[in-house]
Image 1: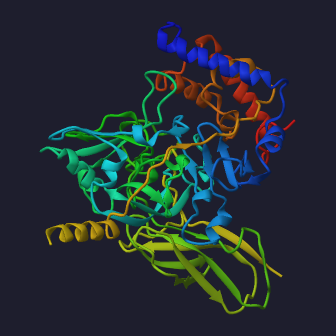
Image 2 (image 1 turned 180 degrees about the vertical axis):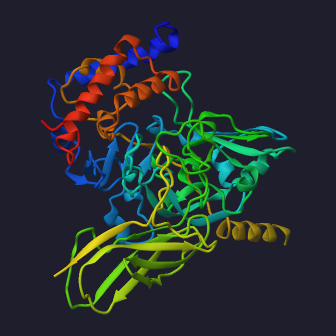
Image 3 (image 1 turned 90 degrees about the horizontal axis):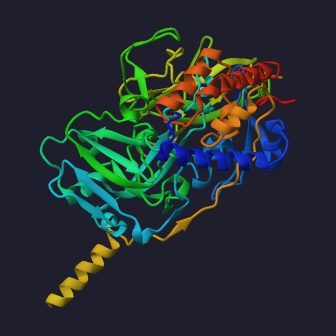
Length: 412
Length: 115
């Protein structure tokens, strides 16, 4: 990389400027102390095995309440688990944020265009009003979950964003059907996939842009949207204003934000974030394995969480106990939730159904606590008969965690 | 009559499936990244080669991995992400993360090398 071409030079000058800025802070201080003083109004311990486990907790990101900070720029913010006990819809100001590359911090709505091209009859450049007028307006309640949610709990640990379990949220998304937007250009024969790009771009020329594609049959689904609304409000800029893709039941890596390009492909997608990353082994592997076959991570499996009690909480001996939490079916409706533990399997009551792809409440009343409840967990099963596993195969990127999440409660 | 029909149709369309959507300009200001890297061998190489793209927090939050993994991470940054890393700085960068993570082991609950 010492060739000193223009692109490298540009990046280098940015880098140097940043380095100078970093140096201007004066002195070298231990990270947690400074993080606490300047951005964190507190710290939170995510309980990641082997650490480091503490993260700043701050309300200082625009439009956000208190969030767990994994990265400042571009922002990577996690929802504290306590938020999920408050309801099945995650408020916009507590919804997790994840950007792969720097994104613009301002949007000129009148100037924004979405180019629709590739294998289409007539490429078009659409304004935001064109998009809003492309078809019926549709609301979908759907969970948006990072493929790496829970990566920090992988054992052996893997590198990457060290999420706890809060890289997920459920919102009511409003927009038009992607297929109605595609119809403005007309999908040509032989279309195989539809690829999306947003305004977030790499800092260095030649680095892969964050572009993602979905198969054409998924793209043509009635509930796959080009969305501008999130819980009845315009998409916050941190969530992809003015438009983002919504693919209910699929991990959020496909929900491209600040949508600017839609491209119809006639073959496989060889772009980096589809062909090289966001992939999982087709069969279980060990950390020593190399060169195994992988496939893109796509649909979400079922998950569930106990939200009424934290691990280690004290419960009243001899008294009734109310447990509650949230669950999701993934790419199919939630069918049931059971509370499981050693010699324990109790069916839970499900709350209102707000849609196939949303969170659903579960609750369970235990008439009398007769002792400690060790290693209990909620276990979700979806309408396809897929159940959360008690043990989950390790994968090198820590994707798609859905093992039963367990806590222990002490009776006294 | 014809005009009335058109007006009625517009009203129906307006209040039924296509309510008006208003797209306003939007802007935010992100907080600065205040976290500093703790001292260690190779700190200068990390500041010069890594911090343009990585928040110190991200680097310090990684689980402990062997030296070879840090070497492969730096290699990936250069080859895949086209990071303008000075090749002579690679051993220093790797030394730094190995040393900082060794300090973290002494304090597993903490974030980074609390001094």
